[in-house]
Image (cartoon, rainbow, N blue to C red; front, side):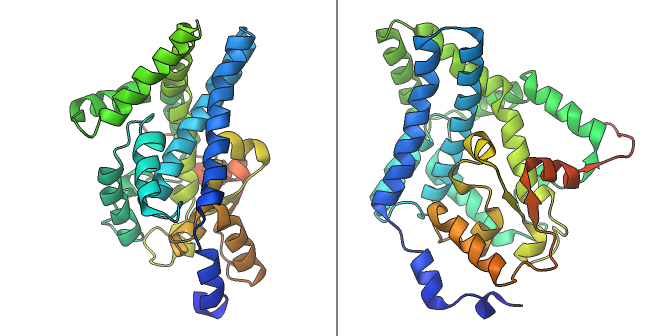
Length: 298
């Protein structure tokens, strides 16, 4: 079954229509959660509220990457200027993601998905892997080892003007928290970056291509997967509909706020029938991505 058999050009045109208003709603929700993540422990300092804050901030880092990704595709705002400004100065800045450099790299992933030239292939090339090996990786994520490795690499690549949004964001964040009498809350950001974000980012990577039945196939249903998620998974692990990754690879021009509709349409018309390309939550991701055999050295 071909895509043209299940979706018309008119339907695809409607699904691909961009809306500044709709994009701003998603951006406002993201920023509101970001502010709430700091406001909660400042208002009620306690280990529990700080833990909630750290988890929420890790989710916002995930969301920042997703929003920057959508802007890099020019598939969030209808106005190109807004895609550039939001992607570079609002979404990309907190996580040190220079938009133009990321765009050039990421488009190669789309161009070469299903081939050995895919620049993201190394992230998931060994999956499914032994359970013990996977948990060692998660252990390195949760103890800060992965983040320190990545931040060291970022520091070596640090260069103006690409890094200016990152510096501006962190100087501004610290200044605001200082003005509020809570400069200590800045440490919550780095706790999330060091000890939580690497693990949830890894889970996202695995869900997208690590559970794919055949990464050497040019059919997106074979080399990419979508994950159906609960609300709490969407809040932290899969913000901004990033879980609909298969649909994104099929039609990269469809904005994130319409991917759920596209998924429902394709599923209802049998496009995924007989294909193991849909994960049942992140528990389902791990079931497909992990083997029961003895671990080999990571």
